[in-house]
Length: 260
Ligand SMILES: [Mg+2]
Image (cartoon, rainbow, N blue to C red; front, top):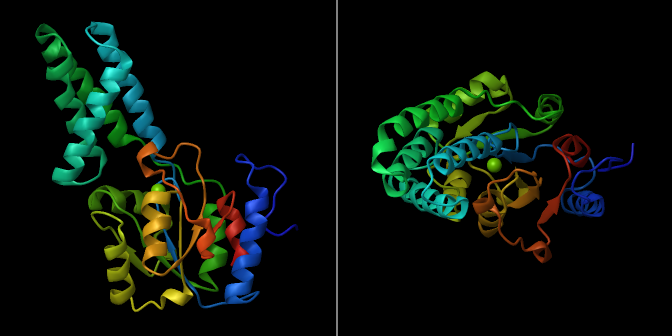
């Protein structure tokens, strides 16, 4: 099989994937074992942001129906409350629903508020009950990688929500350590390195978010594998310093078993 490569790739990054294979071969040696592979969860192991996009679409349609403001204003107000509540209480689906509730009195005519609160409860229930589907090939790939490397999970979010998703996914058994920090910044990566006794020169962070998975991991001295995902939350996007020589891109999760 062609290394890293793949006839069908949704992102047109086959060349980057090929470069990535060679770089990691050079760093760790072909067939290296005993690395520490740290995985992001949302939109890396299982789908997540697409559920928020669905909730947002339903919420916007609801507010447009009662009139008073346009789609851009709704999005802008929602984003304001979303970020505010993240700063107050952290990430998570429960908090997102609270943000939806906070938008109503700002944008909807008062006589609609009671009914709209009921509709937001419904949107929230759908969001909270949505099962996060494991991405194609993830379980099979982790099975292979776990035989050769130490696997860790490092995901931000609401701890109860993330742990419940992990249990439902059936992937818990592959990870020797689970971390759910309030934010994935450089400091928290350094804390993880210290607490789990990881040598950064033998440790790779793998995920879909440049802002949370790639850049702070590079800053903490780790290597990183970026797996782009079509529906990544726009606030997780950021420029990646590819020139640093410690980050590679692969086009899909199953390619990891060829890289490592
Ligand atoms: Mg993610």
